[in-house]
Image (cartoon, rainbow, N blue to C red; front, side, top):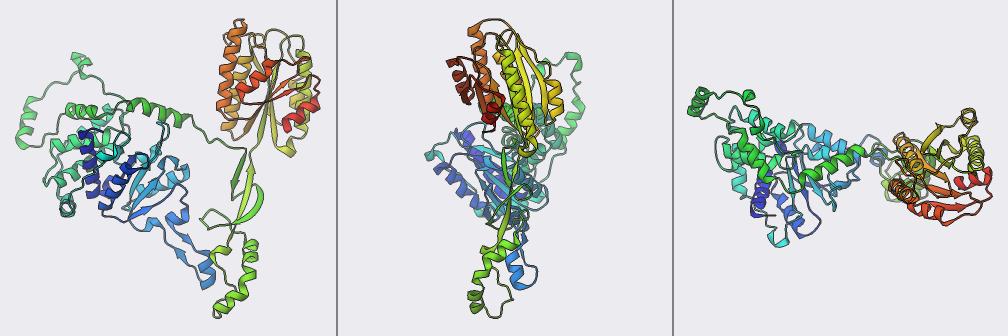
Length: 552
């Protein structure tokens, strides 16, 4: 971090201390250490109490809720207050791990006129690990302290008397009438589509003017506010205005500008704001933001194979816990936990109600929700042994479908031969449909292994977005000889198969490679390594053995 960057960080901290509710908060990106600690200590200058929260914060702690144990003991409803009831500065370490549910609840809290301020301590080690964009968009500033050394970590905050004076003068700062338009146009030219950015920049300019003991926002305040707020939000560089055709340029209005200059209400030129923000853009910021947007757009819910919750699914043993407004209390287990202690508790509290419950007695119900499994059969239908392999796959599909209602399995079958892959059976549980689709099976030709793997990846991605847990069952000898572009050649085909197998392995999904050749070779074992899959050599496998291997 250079000296100008350190000065901008100090000005952002000072502005936040003047108007924490209006500027909402800031993101501080730094790994835990003396640098982060120095700026963390500087937050004590905020005129709000500091409250540390964590990514696992529940609704009862944030919004308050019913205290079950106290209510039963007192014979009336006793409610615990939440953090949202008192304006405070919420400090969230490990912000990059914030789950979507907490992100939504904190966003709701910040959107309400509650007077809260949020400080996100982003500890991500890689560019892909970052604080949730929905929260960062609501906060005025983003400080990246990654390149700052411990000796340079010296945040400077104005004296308490100066901060108090700036807070008192904040409501009397005069706003130039053209300032909002200039800030909005500058934000649009940097590709900032959120309307929060110009409003936050305007509030920042007002706080800076109050710190400088000015009665009106000047051009320098607007320029500095644009640097502090827009630099971390820019998505692309502004276009060069010289590229605009001569006929499309607006005619200069000399008389108006002269009148405005006399009145002193002229907004700063938009080009000045553009140049100021462009000079503050850190290297690699735009490419890093592109990666982050791609990751968030491509990321789905990622439904797992087992999901523990408190609403539905197979019941699990109850566990001690604190009600958070979402969990269900297991009444029987709670009473069973409290029963052995009633005699002792009665001796210490003879005037208490008939039943004495402590928070440690409360048991919460738990469930395990198993998502449906999709078994994708990718069958090598090439060569002389194709019909044998397809017959075995057909029998295994029918066996699995017969047990689908018990194990909640769905199946899909694709065959690859010649130059591509064909989806013979879309994901289904219908045994009648499976028999109809698998009645006539193609066979013969080359081995486009890469095409079959790519088709399996596409089916798995679509299934996972629908809440299924895909599993691949690949029946092949691994001897690819057709590349992705349909050209023959063993070397190119193997290279394409390895690259496509890496896609499946990157999904962290289970797979099984079954080599049904009469003489199993090393190719199928190598393919299993590329996929991160189990490998089985079953030269004399029948449908039941294949079905048992997949089920196991």
